[in-house]
Image (cartoon, rainbow, N blue to C red; front, side, top):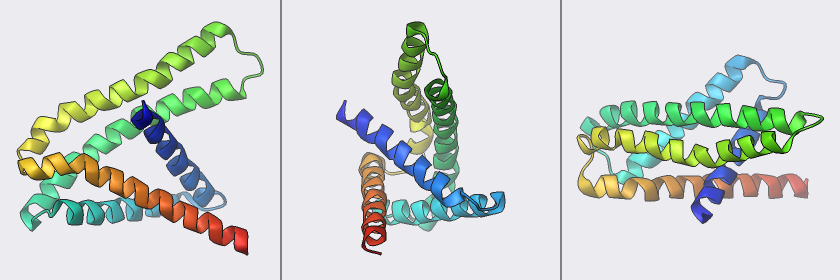
Length: 157
């Protein structure tokens, strides 16, 4: 349960960071930001997992497809949640449906990740595959610490 709350918080933090950054910027700037963010994550994961040059391209091709799929369902769920939050009147049935969708999101994300497991097994060593989730958590922690440091600097100014 803590992991679900942590991941939901991280997704919300990342989405908020993107929206703050994108405010007043051109679409091309947002595209560039996403590209740079993905490249940074690639470098981080590559280092953490000690990927060989031969592993990098096939791994990130698969990993990025998996991330794109999970991002798509996350965005769809978040859009549904946002519409509900902005609605003037919401029925208990609508709240129930939205709640189910929010909790189902993690199940769907897990199913997507599991569906890519066999592909990842053909690219990564057993140790690298085992360390993947830990490396993702380290990346997310680093992202949150960066966000916190940025917020603290903004408060001081």
